Image (cartoon, rainbow, N blue to C red):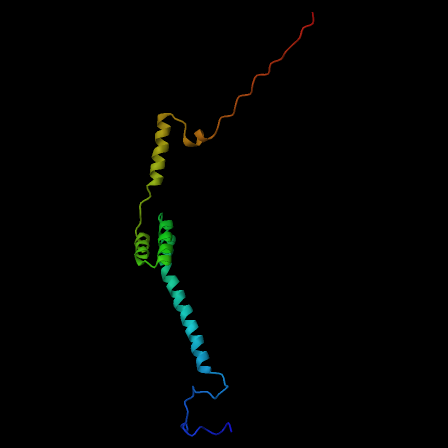
Length: 139
């Protein structure tokens, strides 16, 4: 009975049509390929999304934290302007102003005779109280 075909069916059926009760191998193959494609495209998306942060980290940029925050804001809000701003900020080399300013401040403190910041933060040790010796004289 299983060998007989329905009278309306054609003699040669395509390969992807399965008999009743059999597993559909085409559906299984398409599901696996679709799952793999979604995972690969998602991975590619996250790799491209982290590009500005990696560029700033590789270049040891001062503004690395700002670039990382802009990348996260872009990821969660889907506003691409934050990603573009982070990419541009990662490409720009900002000058380091804090190191020379700190050096200038230390030099001025030495010239003025003030205590330096390191010496001012250390509290001076209190002087020990003089010991008073009470002597009783017997009369």
